[in-house]
Length: 130
Length: 108
Image (cartoon, rainbow over all chains, first blue to last red):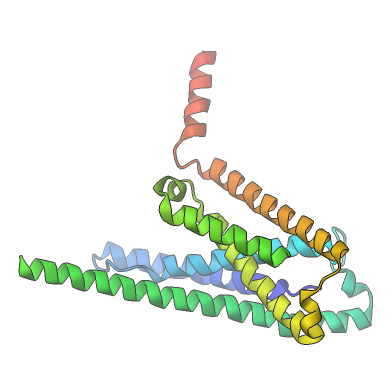
């Protein structure tokens, strides 16, 4: 009905956070430090999945006639009973979608950090041996 | 069916992204975000539906399957269109810029 609104809202929030974090990291970098994968770069992955996923889901809702190009945009908003069902779906499916995407991103971000750390260690070892 | 088509598209684009540096340069990553994001979200939808209807979920009516397949293909087409527009705007190889500059100098 409108489950994609939850991940889309998260996407708005994470996009703002990413912009702020990126600015702060650029300031830090100009002071000269940090070579590992930036947090803002990792946040970009989450933004991409949230925006991309909710965009394609919005298309699916349009396909099924659940979204209209005129006010109130959601067909379920025309009837109070449908509105209640829509809100329930947003709270359950929508939240689960946002949580799953964020969890997958978190795993990918941790894995990326581990890979970077292993590569650094290997480089250090190679330098020490040479 | 929509979930299946999107997952297949996600896997194919991931393999292309992983194996080809040219593909990475052409911002195929955008497709990965879209396909994996949508796949995860539709996976939740599928689980919810499975919890509601049980094994019947795996026996869809032919008409529903056809409509879902049509939707899945349309979703892939939409994602490719978004990627193409992004590619033309970002123009990572300066192809559009070069073409426009050539035309401008040709006109002079």
